[in-house]
Image (cartoon, rainbow, N blue to C red; front, side, top):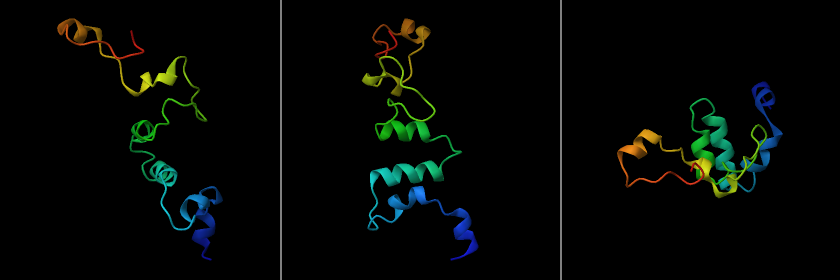
Length: 93
């Protein structure tokens, strides 16, 4: 094996890449973390894969978050005042 392989090999990801050669949603999620680490897509990926409202290593679950209210942002009050047909997103009432 090359020195580069030994330097860059991480056994934590072996199960995802070599599990019968099949791509899974979990391996895709992990790969996007590695490939897009500095591009600001992690939050959107976590929402897309249904993981954003769950606690993970650097973020505890917020109170009442199981309903997923943190996947959308609150609508600013001045916007709600301009349009009476709008309602505030759930969880931000």
